[in-house]
Image 1 (cartoon, helix red, strand yellow):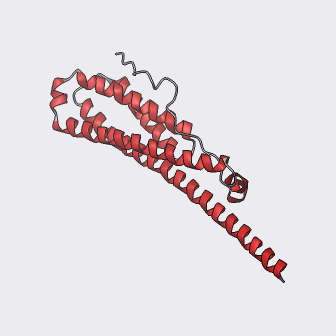
Image 2: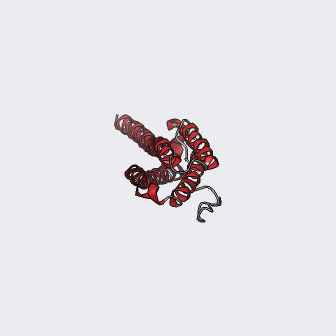
Image 3: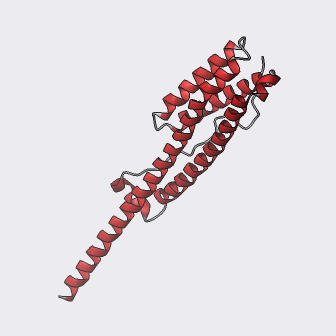
Length: 186
C-alpha cells in the first residue's frame, strides 16, 4: 500500500513538472513572438510616416526622383518583411529603409526653407520617436529571445522543447555594414 502511494506521488510530481515546464516554455515563446510583433508595429509605423515625409520634401526638391524611388522601394520591403517571421529579412528591410531615410534627410539639408517647415519638423520628431521605439522593441525582443534560448538549452527544460514545440529563435541583429555610418552621395 505504501509503495502505491509513493508511486502515485511520483507520477503526480512528474506530470506536474511536465505541465509546468510545458507552460513555461510556451509562455516564453509567446513573449518572444509578441516582442517580434512589437518590432513589426514600429517598423510599420515608420513606414507609414515615410509618405508624408517624402511629400513634404518633394515640394522643395522635385529633381531628387531617385531618392524618392529608393524610399518607396525600401518602404515596400519593410511592409513585406513585416508579414513574415524571418528575423534577418526584417533586419535587412529595416536597414534599407534607414539608408533611404538618411538620403532623404541629406536632401532636406540642402533646403533651408524645408528645415524650417513645421510639417517637416513635426515629421522629423515623429520619426525620431519611432526610431527610439524601434530600438526599444529590438532590445525587448532580444531579451525575450535570450530568455527563451536559455530555457531551450538548459536542463531540465531542454527535454520538454519537443513536447512544447518550442525551439531557439534568432536574435535581431543589424545586417552587415550597419556599424559604419551610411554614405550619402548625390
